[in-house]
Image 1 (cartoon, rainbow, N blue to C red):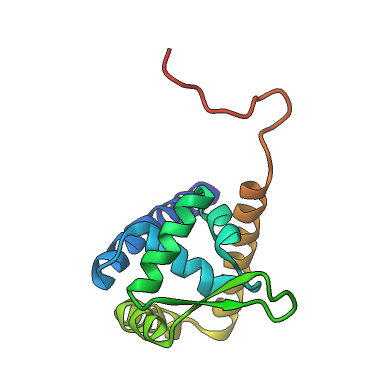
Image 2 (spheres, one colour; image 1 turned 120 degrees about the vertical axis):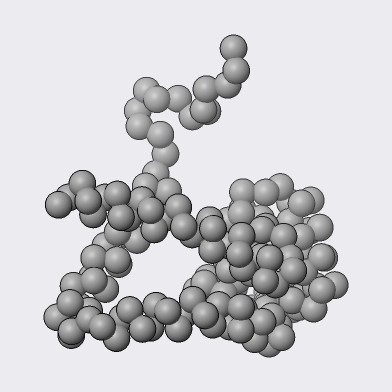
Length: 157
């Protein structure tokens, strides 16, 4: 059963890429734009261009171009940090949030229908399992390579 669950989790993780691609297509934006907007929605912290770029794994100049593009499209606004007026903060516009909700509506409806079919004990078990798997994935992503493994992936010879 552990193998079956592992394969199901792997399939779910891989479908996230498909979902992001479909979301980008529905919103008429690029995949990096969707990833940026997802980061802004999900982050418990206020993000600026540098932090957003770091989370996306892109350089500062690329992050600035990305932010300019999203701002010009009406998807985000720049603001000033409440505690440090020198810092720029990024906020999704209500229009962008509304477009996200509309684009994700069919998916959220399907997930809601599936969830409604669970009894309360099953729902608790599934929620706990998904939170635990999410924590394991985040821990893996935050950790460096194992000792002696080197930091760079192998390149062509």
